[in-house]
Length: 111
Length: 115
Image (cartoon, rainbow over all chains, first blue to last red; front, top):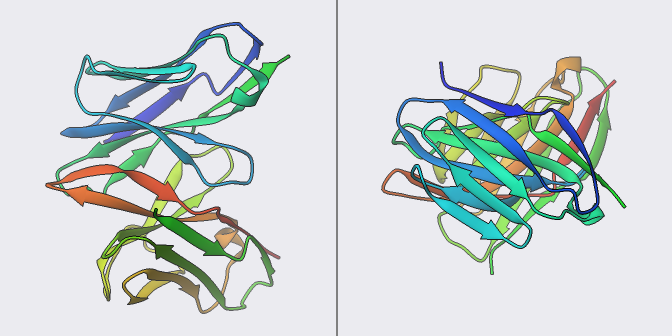
């Protein structure tokens, strides 16, 4: 069964304390892995898409990496405004319409 | 630029009442449209997707239905709401080319509480 698991469920950091969020997946025929940021009461905001193992993408303090079994979202020197829920999702199969989302990691960054 | 509008933002409805949530997309033609539901502490669950007018696929058997009367309009409906229909509903659109989804753009969501 296709599955996406994110860990930890919640992460509390001090401002400037770098860390990583994990997204492990078991899907047949990975077509893409996505990272989204979601603020409370709002829709998710697209961050990255990764398509193949070894690929990396960066945006400001965020860097996403992909292996054959998992993806990491590295947060370097986070600021309080980085506090949000980060969602990982994978596209499974060739149709382009089946995307499986993880439950998310809630990140809290304290000043 | 493409924008997606979803309304209402919040809704409190009694059990057994009807539901209609609307979503419109601007700045793109023939988008792939989706309705997702998000339960607290759980991942987004795909409810419906549409690749064109009157072309709708249902992913989960449930008390809900979807319609796409116009190219950039997607509607989620129910004839009689259940308590279990409560949740955060999200409309989204994406580009899919050659079987690859290039990522979703989500609306701002509707918080539905069935009482």
